Image 1 (tube, rainbow, N blue to C red):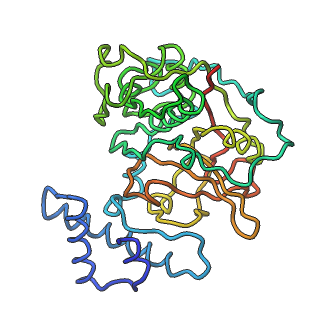
Image 2: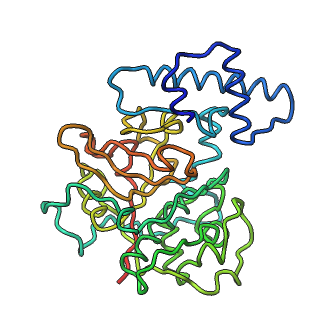
Length: 336
């Protein structure tokens, strides 16, 4: 509704904007602490709606943007609260980055010069759990890693069942990473290999905040991995395509303002690869002959964000790092 509303109308007058803001507050159950805060948030809301309207009026655009739960927040606020990937540095002084950080391609996979399917969508194979919501905990690293482990468990696990696993377990118990203050993809996988896997989401439910590790909840692992590997970076996305043809892959990206307001279509938005700050899971791709090929990307901002929680990100853009740097920090679990 909201995306279509913004896509089809001119920039509203202030009275209409006020009404839209009030309706949005009801839809997203937003309550402000003071009239001053409400006025400040309204101005941010208005600025973002005008920016979205301007984009959605561009002829020939490949994607639309829409109003979502982030619309009364600045981009800096969204990045500070709703991302979570840490790269190229230690999170703090207490945990060194001890991952083996191997740049290796899965030797069990097909060679890079062999053909892959024209399209892959692991959702259609029943190998992807529903979209989840990390909330304002900077735990995208945990959600992206868990999503890939869930899929691997369905594809190669002993039971071949799709089971929703616990992100909260990583947030609380992974001593290599820092819970709601961010984490690495490879060290999250390392923790899983060293600690006998993950509990189910039912046994160890998500709370959206860091707490003590619940050893009782994690006493019975529902899925595990034997190892994890890194997709060769800067390979024109071909190595990444080879692995996604076999299983979902966890990647780091650099989010942009347009990304946070994505609604539908193939995202080709302006973003850099300089500061990877968010983690997502690639669950498929579509190679388009007369158009823009794209990756099918599962996010962790809930089903109300984007295309029912997903985003299509442009593929084979001619830059080795991929759109928003998605080919730079890509990891996937394996199970022997």
